[in-house]
Every structure is written in structure tokens, then in C-alpha cells.
View 1 (cartoon, rainbow, N blue to C red):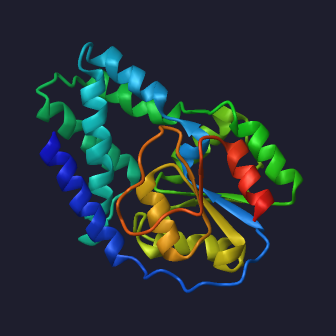
View 2 (view 1 turned 90 degrees about the vertical axis):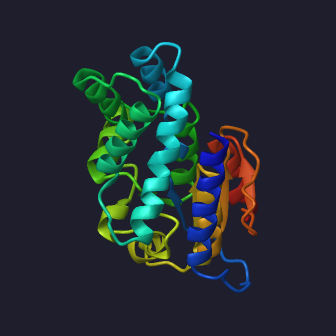
Length: 251
């Protein structure tokens, strides 16, 4: 497992290094929009519980390896020009994790675990945080590796229909974050300058990628993890959307 984690870090460092160089310092500009990674808003914890139900006593190890491979595959597919959508990447990583841990992945278990990504619910603080941003005139978007059907399913589950101005999947550009093509979708969708759009990241690696691209970046560190050692830091860090709202109020 340690070798896997070291491999993940090497892949991630190489991918971030391939992204745009850090943008030059700019004068502060009023924030007009926020682009969210999906897991800032939607809680992946139920998928962890599904994994434990499918593989009692092995759920935590299985889920950890599944998630690691899930994101390693996105980075490797982008680097090698072999993009497939996040649903397929997720399923391929699922199959790998089960084989690596010698677990019996029946068709029923496979389907149940995959369907968990269509049943995501919002974090409890998401609705009041989003309402506060909308009340302040801030435009909202998802900028996610997930497919648009995955995102739209989660939006419906949470009752957030019509709340987001844009639902941006990396399928549009055929490149996963932290590739600059993915982050550029926010500029094109909002028609705003980089310094006017906050990117809200769930993963530390995503915060690093967005900051390298030039976005003011908020890391919603819900898991209380240490910062990635990638030579760049987010503009602010917090654990909830209330912290994001406070950051934008100060910006």
C-alpha cells in the first residue's frame, strides 16, 4: 500500500508539473462566480458504507484502493491521450481493487457499488451555503471529472435543480483535472477573468491544480488532510461551505 501511495504521489506531481505555470500576481478583483468540485457539495461517505456491506471487514481497504486507482486512472488517461468518461474509469478502478484484494465481485455487487454514485446526497451545510452565495449575487457551477448524468442525478437527489448556472463535465474537453483544459471550462462558461472565479476543491491535489491555473482557490478540506507537497497552496482552507462564504466575503 505504501508503494501504491508513493506511486500516486509521483503521478500527481508529474501531472501538476505538466499544468500551466503559476499565474502572475494580479490586483484583487471582486468575486463573481464559484466553480465547485462535486464532492465539495455531495457526500461520498455512503459509498464507503456500500463497500463495507459488499465486503464485510474489507470495506475500508477496498474503498481506499478503489479511490486511489480511480484518480490515478484519470491522470494516466489524460497524460496518455486515452480519455474515457468517469463512469468507465470508476468501474475499471472498481474491478482492479476487487482483484487486487482477491474479493468476489459478483455482478450484483458491482452494480450496487456503481449505482452508489447515482445516489449521492448533499452535505448538510451545502444548501445554506449555496443559498448565501446566490443571495450575494454569486454565480455557481460544477467543474467536475464526473459525467454530466452523474452530476445531474446528484443535483436531483439534493433538490438543487436550477441552482447552478453551469454543469461542466471534463467530458466536454476530453481531459481530467488537473489538466488546464479542464479548468479553462470555467472561464469559457462564465465569461469572466480567472481572478473573478473562485474554484472550490475537495481534494488537495485539485486545489493545487486550480491554483496553478490561476484561480483564487478555496480548499474545502472536509477530511482534515494535510496539504499536498506540490509547491503551491490554496488561498484559503476550511471544512464547510460556511468557511467558503466567509472567504468570499473577505476577498
